Length: 114
Length: 110
Image 1 (cartoon, rainbow over the protein chains, first blue to last red):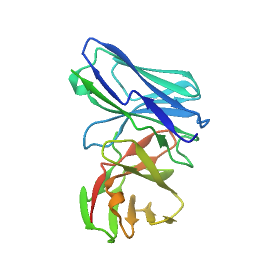
Image 2: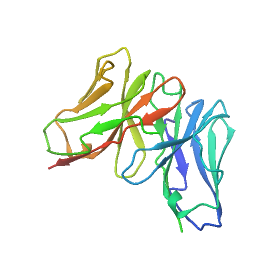
Image 3: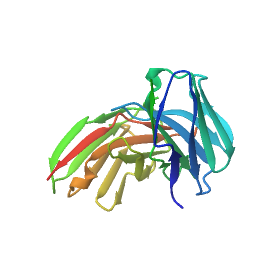
Image 4: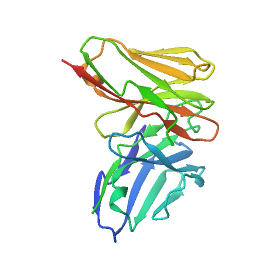
């Protein structure tokens, strides 16, 4: 299996809702990432997990809460989001932190906050 | 945070022509990578060039890296309609961060 699977593909949520984005990989990659991408912009790093521990938080608001239950799964819990949080959320994994090989990205979750 | 700039922002070419795009970055790097993104979907890794390499080929792709100028270029030869996409360069340093450039949108006309 050489894929990163993200669910759901689309999500519409109200500002008072709580939802979660899920990401799964079975490549044995030890680093996993959440990126946020606005339309016509490059992806922006949110969080990095290395060996199931949060190693980087790019000053992301607390309404975004990451979780790594095991080495294959990565969740992003969403609560009290704002309309400006609407974006494509991308999960990625890498074998070696991108030092020798590239990242594998999922297809993303298109999030709309209403 | 965004590492650098890509040039041009958009490129329109005829099928069969070559497409060249450039990337500049600001800090020292371990490697530079190029990704393709089709219409708001996930990114696909194309090629990685290490900081001690100057040129690399993969199929119809040719990447160059000039660390003295902090710049890289991606050449796609004999373009096809399926090459229509956004192309991003990304730099990797020691800190497990992959930082993306602004991207170049390539349109290949049939």
